[in-house]
Image (cartoon, rainbow, N blue to C red; front, side):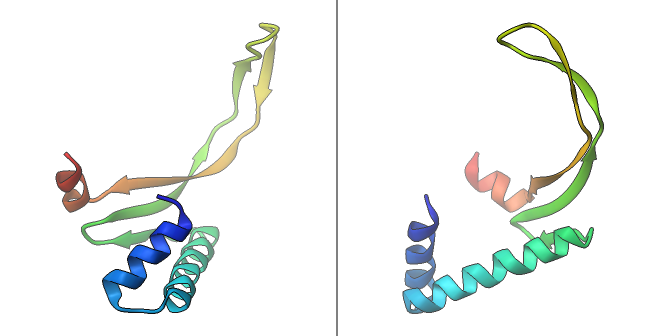
Length: 90
């Protein structure tokens, strides 16, 4: 499912226009991004939670040449599915 399909599904499910559904989705993405940038955790009960973790620096290998390279440390976004979401998928 891509963004346009998600907007269509949200509009149909909530009885909104596609424009309103797009505004709601954009607002959710913006609010989640701002919270994660600030170091907060975003938890949606039953769906899951988004958090930021630090990935430490490590040594990798270039698959074409076999030469070792250094991979820098960075922050990554992690999503952990909630119990209801996990149960409904499995």
